[in-house]
Image (cartoon, rainbow, N blue to C red; front, top):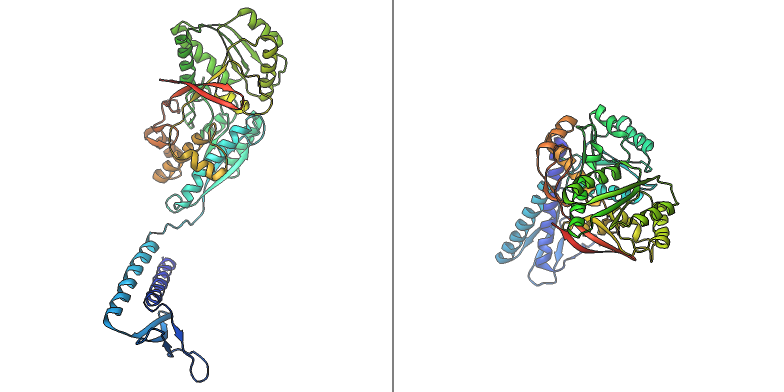
Length: 448
């Protein structure tokens, strides 16, 4: 307390000295200090002002600094005092309202796939969290306490995801974790954080895939509900008269969740999934599957792969065997179609994707990282802000944070005003249908 009072007094004295000298300088334009007979300019010497009729006397003992004793007309005195008062009030207001960040930091863990098949998403996760923490620290931290982000690479692998999360919890002693990237595919740390009663919010995973068959109380997701996305796609295809579907996808909890919810809605709207083909992430030969699909002749082939080798191999062989087929997927394909090697392979390829909410987040993100905010960047930003909002209100106790997350609304850049549902996910947010093309994609329809 004494240190803070001393700091405020020092700041006040500095403001007074600065304002006084600056005000006098405004009125006099410039001052010339006349040397005495010995050629020096000691305290108490007279200032010779080029403006006729003004005598200034410099004293060096006011507030430990400089003040100017002057002899001038009354109007000039009023002007100087007015300027001094305005500057002092403005300066002291800023001193009193300055938000200082001090003390031991609050540690937030980040479990991101910075290498491996999910690295594009992991980078987006990390950047979104980084931006949120930087903004909050700049604004004074959490009630004056700074935030520290501790990042561990999950490598896009199940075992290493658990290793990364374990280190953040056991060694780094983080208060909460944002991640892990693709937690629906790499679910190994979910039972671990449940046992430790530590909050984990993933920005890039389907909550319905995570919470099936067991429901976990300490794991949340700010990614779009994949069940809603799948059901929207089924309804869209039914409306378009595309009623016969074949699914080809990776053996993966996320894609299993997607197709299960798609089939549930498909039955209700008259869409039939005729066949399902599942492949391994390292599979490169799809010729047999594509030939069998061609024989079935569906209206649509829904494709869901986790790796670029799957996507590129499938698209090249499809171009040879069944180029007239119509493909549909999710936003997961978007990270690949802008890369080299896909030119000429994207004919009749569409995908459903979340509709972006219009706000200034994309520009702030691009200003900071010099790249566009893709995939889960905004979801990671929101996950961080939600956790930190809870901490600012209830402190660092995990169970209190969990209750706050469950029972309050949050303002987000991805969805607007939302709250977590019973699954620990976020409902809402619209979807669009995009058509893939060389170098990118374009929106062809917004879904209501």
